[in-house]
Image 1: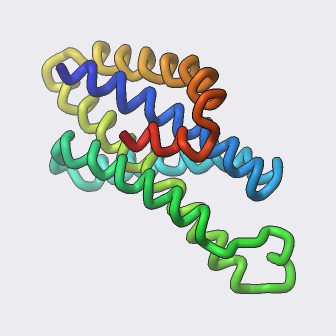
Image 2: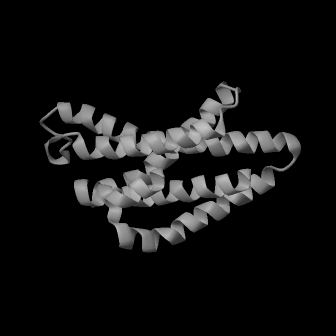
Length: 165
């Protein structure tokens, strides 16, 4: 059963990354679109650091719920924060908005990374980490392939909500 969950969270994570790429490209123009990949890596890297420092295993249910809630929260921050990339050179408030904007977008990836990383660590104790890793790769591939029809059908904004579910 855990493998199905890993497949789903991995697919949702890749789908969210691609939806954010599209949203950033539309809202802040193409030069910010590439930040979606960097923010996903930031969240994943931060989760690895947290798992190393804090050895206590978190509940998979709560991490999935946190992923969904922070995905919706990130979407709201991205849409309602008055960030204007064109005025960042003369309006210092925009630097604060930029930091909030990017941190909010990275948090869902943190929770997804905590979930997958925690399951990998737990499976490593039983010698089954290769199965969790395979489920992660399959889910990521499915999320990438599913992004084409889902983004075409729902658009970037609704696709973010689909990933939250």
